[in-house]
Picture 1 (tube, rainbow, N blue to C red):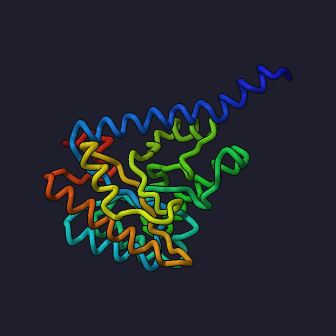
Picture 2 (picture 1 turned 90 degrees about the horizontal axis):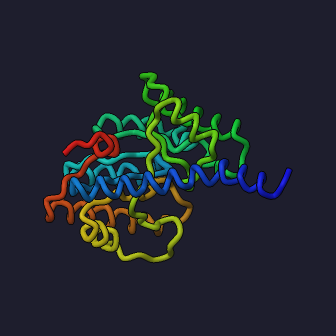
Length: 232
């Protein structure tokens, strides 16, 4: 096998999904600005400690968010997953084991996607069998992308990252200011339980800050599917 052919295979396996992801993020940003809306998304939950407090804050502002549940974190927290759904928030999937799909086999990656859906169905009861999907680390391989496209599953990214998994300190108003400046955004935060709860306050304060900004600026708050469907 030549170097060129190897390069083409690598591009097809990782490069095509990467380009697709960048395009989808551009589309999300364009839609959010066009409609002047805010979409709050939370990954890796549900968390026993953080998720219920986030739900209370959302209720205070009469706002709906989108939760990308991680399958392995649903076990023992089925009641919280049901609470999310019962309060009218959108439930989507983040896979089961938070795998990096470039670093595992296509078979294992697709199995992880399916297990994530099954974990949600087991908690909620009704069998939808598939949910909008956000790839862990924002990474897909070609076969996962093909599988999701065949199943007609929306692959959802984000436009603004709170940075609560990779930055040590962030001003809680940072995301609100960026979202206001952009004229609309899909915000990424995380609601899983950490061994160190020092980040919880940041996430809660940032959530309040961005909701208050949306209220002051008369910016509508939508779920992911409402934005993708073009609801105005």
